[in-house]
Length: 178
Ligand code: IMP
Image 1 (tube, rainbow, N blue to C red):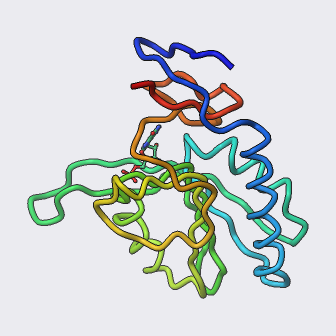
Image 2 (cartoon, protein in one colour):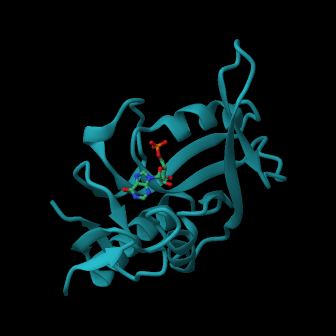
């Protein structure tokens, strides 16, 4: 496959459709085992996770619910600093087995700030599924319970991930060329 251009930058093929889907089937198999009879609630974080969430959810054979939320960040007061709120989270998490679906964990800041808000609602368990993780970019370390791929600290696009709004519709994952 050839190099592609998104906006002003060039990207090279990195993860193929087959690699992505086979890894998703593997994760789904684990979830089907771990969450049998638990009716988990999946919370997919938009925008980047919409394709990943759909493909993973189709592979689940257990009873499961899914909802989609968007995280908005804004500057709070001096004491609260930077605040992240969830738009569209209208489910009661109390006593539920909750599974977060994230496209990519980069610095870890987003989840680091958002997870305490979910824990506050006292779910009976809270786990994280991420398609991609850049360990070398970590600023806020966190445990990812189900991980697709651990990747180098290079910008990627495709499969739902964008570069400045574009590239989400590319079926494979491409990474920035040197
Ligand atoms: P974090 O808070 O630094 O972990 O960033 C998480 C968010 O940044 C992801 O949900 C993505 O929306 C975005 N992001 C981080 N790295 C990339 C990348 O390589 N390509 C596209 N989006 C990215």
